[in-house]
Length: 148
Length: 94
Image 1: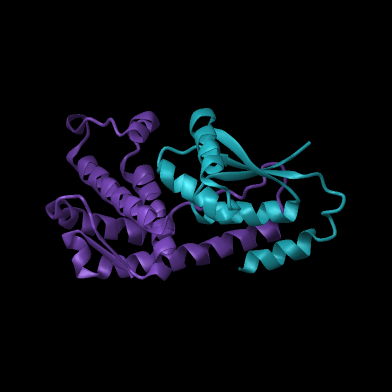
Image 2: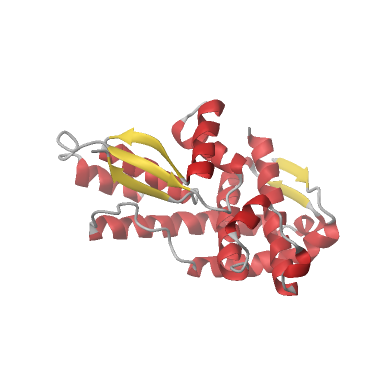
């Protein structure tokens, strides 16, 4: 069992959990990664590749759902089985990518990467989703620390 | 994994004559640096220094060739990296 407490005010966690849940549900409609061959296209392989990723991503999301459905998560506690840890990390990355694409498109890559984002210059909705994005990063950092 | 079976069937006759293939990871602004390092260590078994070197290359140059070799293995690595949500392409190593 992996257990740790987020270094974030639990008031923030409670606010962002519904947003994370909303994004988690919408992730299944997200554009899939491009087939990695740039110069050639094997339709059968591309289909198998795509379908296999769809299944693997769905499996990862189920693990994230187990974490989100734990009522203690909203209070800042991360509790999950070791078997779920890698799946949750991948699913968190997918949700963060979705938040970036869907809810934070106006933020420059360089600003997002450096974390130098002025709250006063983004809308209230963007502020909320950016907080969700940061909370997920905190969960991921905690999991990496636990696993290494 | 379904894909491993398919790639094995479709490439086993080609590997002897095929050129090597490069697995290339592209930069993105979302993934945490230590996440990328962890993924490289898990997927390729890199030690920490080598994983950090490739992560920095991705971050600073926008891309890093993380592995090269047979097409079949390159596909397996590319699939694993995409499963971890790293932007990955395969290039012929001419």
